[in-house]
Length: 324
Image (tube, rainbow, N blue to C red; front, top):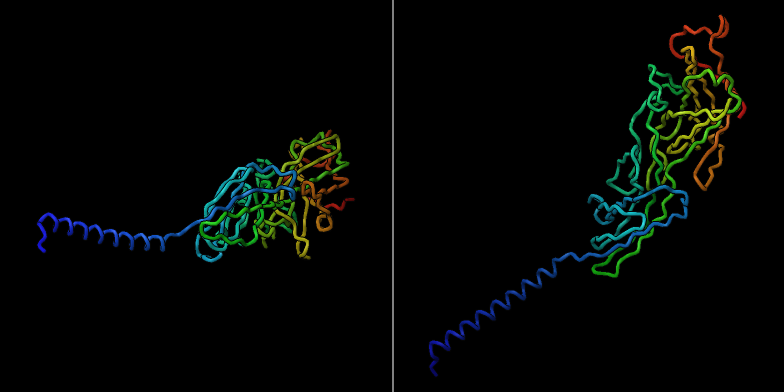
């Protein structure tokens, strides 16, 4: 049977279309096989461990447990939470509030090395004094001085597993305090009316803190802060620290108060508050430790040829034992 030229053209065209369909089908299967499906993570924050928090927004770092060399995937969320899209596999996540100015971060290549710290500072910057170089407490002269940290909260999730095109995973974070607030009150301080400036410092505090575990860094530091007159003979101050070590007997905490008198003389008073800090109980509601000191012998400036001599160069240091 002979076929016409037109019928032969239809047969050729049909064969070509069939071949294209077969090729397309094979290509579709290959693409489907290589495609990386993803899954949703729904993020929320439960603040029952820090009900007094002032966080306004949160950062979440997702770590791929199966690919430890992979950089963490970062998402930023409002306090209401949100979602993330991740590849299938095993994951852990670290969160912390990002409404901070002084806090810096390092070690974020893995979840348990993510660390919060602050830059180097000085006694002058912390106390806001501008009259030359100020001394550190005797015994803490070699400590670095760091900037006071902002309030920071954080935690780490348990390991969770995502599957390809699954129903998603609901991840609930319960952030905890990653700092402590020291409230200092000094009563029975004479001659405050003759002072032009008052400042303070605390030594032996942690210079950093790990976000995931809450463990303190090994480096100790001094922090300086401003001090307010709250009465005729009363001083008060509030300062944030990353924490204080309670497990090391070789760490000493010195509270230092700096005073510049109206005659230009400069005094600093050092009090050993090590035991008070080690034994202090933290107020769970606001993560606060209170230190109360009774008595600080600020002198009168020279008047009519009596009192302390005003022409003393530099700072005069006094180590005192006071009732806590």
